[in-house]
Length: 451
Ligand SMILES: [Zn+2]
Image 1 (cartoon, rainbow, N blue to C red):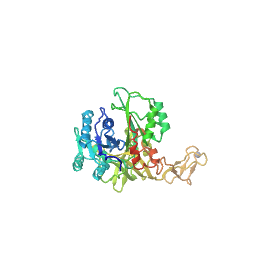
Image 2 (cartoon, protein in one colour; image 1 turned 120 degrees about the vertical axis):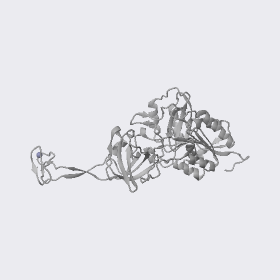
Image 3 (cartoon, protein in one colour; image 1 turned 180 degrees about the horizontal axis):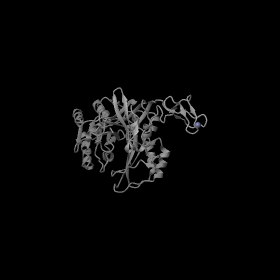
Image 4 (tube, rainbow, N blue to C red; image 1 turned 30 degrees about the vertical axis):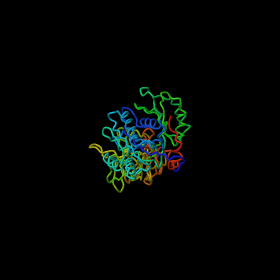
């Protein structure tokens, strides 16, 4: 882009951060908020995108709470070394938990190399190794820094490689001044906000369970988070909740949350890999049963192989839809492969169900007595039917076959209850929306960012 006046000497940097948090506090989004405030305060750095909140494969057991990676994409007059050293100082200051295997990655340049983009795509559904991340970073001359096991470098690199070019959403995250104070919010205001702003905002309130979803419960600095389709929608929704006690500030992130981006690749049943996420099409091969703990299980089969599938208790009503499947039904499911143990086989943990073809299900009934309309009983094979009420006997009456109406419908998507949604789960109302166009330059110029 040509501009009048002296040539600017700004450079584009893409900074990835991951695993600075742990279950005992902190949140990488908060560190990002702090770093951005620090970098932009002096006026020599400018964001060229909302900070990105990239969720990675949710089925990896060693992930931090939500497996989120954070990315700052900016133009700056600072050198790469200066940007790196500011970020590193902040990571060391905040990622103090013994379990924070922090990763920091600084890439210089506008165009993300294909190799990093591919690494990033795989990180959405597969297990990516630290060794591969290190190899790529060395080849691409990426400056990086890690703490403890440095596992966060995988997410940090994967983060910068996901430019959210397809579908994306926004989340406004508000932070609190004092983490010792209990969070509280007037539920009626959240309900009112949800009513006025849906579907432009989503996953704020679970009506079925009368549960507020915007407020976390952990020790981290997040006061609340509002998810939605546009920056102005999440900002308007947030304004409806003001004033808020204990509010430090907020920031809006662009994200792959709510896009279902981890469920795009097909899982191969001939060799399913533990911890991968994906989709499978096949036939129901065993009658679904509800077992101890309220979990529902059945076996799915296709040309490549077979796998037990589970809809766990927290998925709520979803289990009833799974339970109503019949042998032979053709379905598509998405989910994550849970590792097999000596007691349990490898299991596909279901995240959605889409019936493609439903088998007709019949119920066979004994004839009704023509005299008193009671249900007759069979006297045995070839022995006819007898009425137990009035004693009427018949050799000519036969059993009748009825097609039973199925509880589930073909081509309808079934999702777990809201409370069991993963960050990446695409909420049902988002399927009705036109996909977002590629994030436009015009939007980049007018970031509604923070306070
Ligand atoms: Zn009768």
